[in-house]
Length: 266
Image (tube, rainbow, N blue to C red; front, side):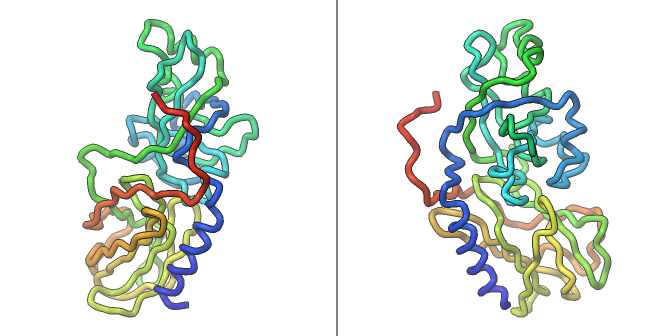
């Protein structure tokens, strides 16, 4: 299947399958915590040790409806607990780095993120940890990486020239999901598509030679948006290295689902 046709096909599937997702709407559930953030660094998104550096270690494992077979990796959520004695109204922002298969909670937070939901009162965070599982409210928010404004492409160690390339995307801003990636040699119009292997990792065994360009299809508005990164990987790219994609994602996807209720997050 050609690159353009494949991207259109993926876009149709995405919006037909996520019609009821409404990530932007407030959801009520429960959350637990991992005693060590390192447990999340070995998670299904395959961020590895980098995971604990995202959002100062405020990371989470998310239910399948949020994880979305890996498309939800890197998504950001504001989450707050409901205990009026211990919990602040602001809560904290977490980034999805793992899959949570528990049917008791939608999110399992790092202990640092769990404690950050507490009021800024001495001992409140410790008391919150003692509860173990708490009622929460959460909704999706744009990811803000501070001075990390540009999308980065990390070449995974499993990549082998000249036949196999595995990448993952870092610092994906906005409130979007990357749903398809095309790859071609710089200057060529002979595009081929990459497939999501697992988590945040995309792969191809149809690797062009020379420097490489990418097209990223992201959810944006009510349709989608193609971002063309005209020169990302040099001809001498190396496994284990990270490269600037030269594009910035700031879009917010408008989900094709029923409007949220009138609940205001304040």
